[in-house]
Image 1 (cartoon, rainbow over the protein chains, first blue to last red):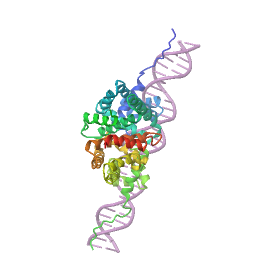
Image 2: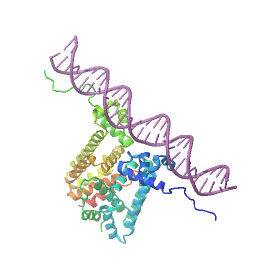
Image 3: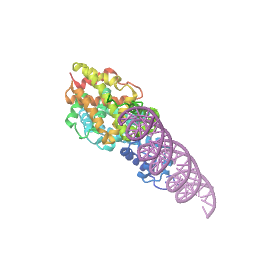
Image 4: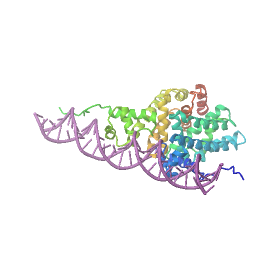
Length: 186
Length: 186
DNA sequence: ATAGCGAGTGTACGATCGTACCTATCGATG
DNA sequence: CATCGATAGGTACGATCGTACACTCGCTAT
């Protein structure tokens, strides 16, 4: 019986584990504090696996951030896809800002790390661009392009505020809903 | 004749030059790529001056970012202080977003580097908090607190978009003015 | 004139970095 | 069963890092 499936010798989830560990590490120590050795230790793989699975630090960062951005975009689309009309879409945007999409500090920090990297190094902008394009497109399921862009900007801006403020949740759900209303009208 | 003034032996602007050089370096290479040696080379001072003038990397970053945030806040206040009524204030906000306050790529990158650092390390949040408080207060010269916060978020959000987009200035002045109008009403 | 002090400098140390490269292991193949 | 290539691991190298610390030397007070 000819075997088509290709059997990995061991541990087929190695690459995934490395990527996941690097995201956690980036959130804790920043891109600055992320090294092959630290990632390897966090993922519990030998140092040699780093250069084996990834061509270098750059490729590791690219893959990790691509995965992260994709996963956030996916959740974003799911939220907006579940809305059946404009009113529900506005409620979804309000929920996205106030609730758990960026609720985990890890995701907030990772988002900023990625933005910062992309702002400084144009070769990472394809990741942020496709992320932004997906978000924009999802918003355009319910809103005109300009309104979509403004809502997107509002999400980014309020997310930043939430990430930087000591006391969490200074902006109430009602206030956010009002903001969405001002931008997206009736 | 008793001398009160304290004469520096040489180069009294050393500290300033170091701070300025570190900001330029952070903009180019990120906090990650900023080292004592690189800053020293950029500022054309010996390596020993680093530990002499600053207790460590952390203090250098604090001073540099404090200076940067202060200077941006100052410009921000100047713009809004020059507005005599609500309409002029709205025009000022539009100008701040579209024009030169964050026009230099350097300032855009530095802003993100600071946000990222503060998001990850709470001990830098006093810098971002006082910056945000100054911006908010300046906006409140003309707008109610909630509107001020939303305008602030809009500025942040659109600034991010500008920093990340390949083609610059996808958002026209007219569109921004419309956005401000939606938020700040009549 | 000179002693002393303190601002400013140069260097060396130990740690850590990315990466290259040689070796080991094991499933697939003839 | 012998061999081979893909996968994985261990280690060593050269570069760079932050920082400590001994030192220099110009200014000031006497």
